[in-house]
Amino acid sequence: MGELREHRLKRLAMRSMRRGIKEMDIILTRYADARLDGMTDAQLDAYDLLLEENDQDLYQWVSGQTAAPAHVSDLIADIRTAMDSVN
Image 1 (cartoon, rainbow, N blue to C red):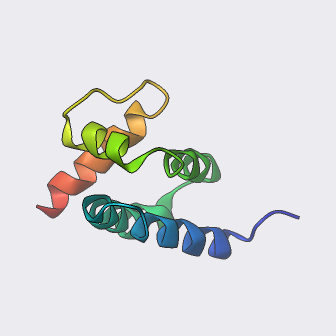
Image 2 (cartoon, rainbow, N blue to C red):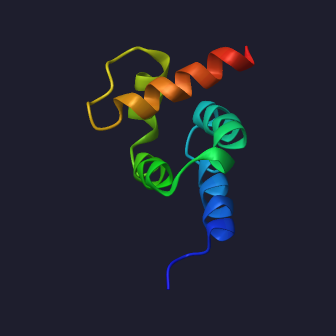
């Protein structure tokens, strides 16, 4: 039996807030708070994989300093959209 959705959401929220650099803690915590509950299982899978990425790379992608790779570009675009709606 797989992980319960409730546990998965809590795990992903914790992983979002305990990154490596403070900027990504803030960005991903806000994103997780805004979006995790509404995500499908497939979207949660993609987010879980995104959390495996290096914080420095993530920050450059989210901030637009470098283009995100194709396999995460849609999710990075959604994170950027969520950031813009908070600001």
